[in-house]
Length: 191
Image (tube, rainbow, N blue to C red; front, side, top):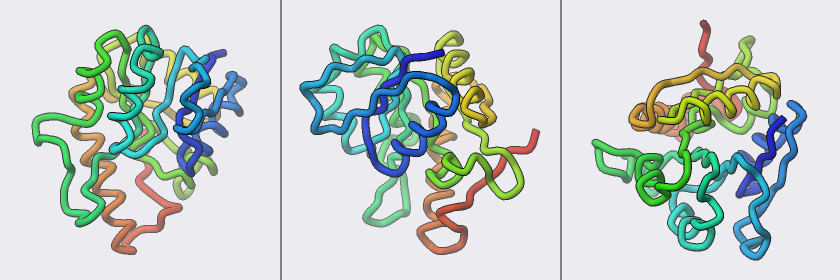
C-alpha cells in the first residue's frame, strides 16, 4: 500500500483520509499550521483552498520534490461564484506543476464533494474520482489507492484536462451554492 500525506484537515481532507485509510494505506494528516512537521508521504494530497497553494509552494516546495502531488482545488471566484480565477487556457493544476517542476502533479478529487467521498456513493452509484496528469505511473498509483478505498477511479487524461475538471467542479459548486443540488449529492459517472 501507499504512504500518503494529506495537507489540510477540513471536510475534504477528512473524507479523503477516510477513503485512503479504508484501502489500507498509511496516512499522515497535516494542517497548514504544522509547517515544522516534515512530509512523510510519497503521495501528497493538497486538500486546501486554491488560495493556499502559493503558501504551500513557498513553505514546502522543497519537500514536494520527487513526490506525487495531488491538487484537489477548484479555483472558483468565491465572491461572485461566476468564474474561475485562472486564465482560460490554464488551470490551478497547471500553475502548480509549473511551480513544482520536480514533482509529479495530478488533478483529482475536485469533481466530488466530501459527502460523496465519505459515503462512497452518489445516489445509487459508487463515487468516481477523475484523475488527470502527465505521469502514467503517478496516475496508476493514485488510482490504485482510490480503488483500494472502495471508490471508482478513472484516468481522465493529461494534466491539460485539469481545466475541464476544474470547470466541472465549478459547475457542481455553483449549482450547490444556488441550492439546485445538495452539497451531499453530485454527479455520478456510470461506465
